[in-house]
Image (tube, helix red, strand yellow):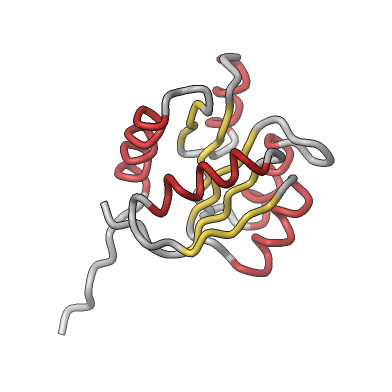
Length: 133
């Protein structure tokens, strides 16, 4: 997989943002943007229009669920993958019902997270098709 484009990583824990950024850069050459909470994420999204958002569920100020609602209301085509260490099936289902394309478990080993992200991205991101001449 050769991931490119802009990716916004949203998590209130700096070490998680750093880890996810390293994981993404292992999949290609994306431009990685970061935000520490939902409010900041909404500002960065509006300004940068990233191709993909990796969004933590539990955050201060505006949590991931509310941030997801606002993102999808302003841009129904935005691609969002939730980040969570929760095992709460109801929360995961709610995220998917709100339009998230999948979720990554932050408490999985790094290789499992990478495999999970590749699977999700393979299902939701289409490769660019060159125009027919």
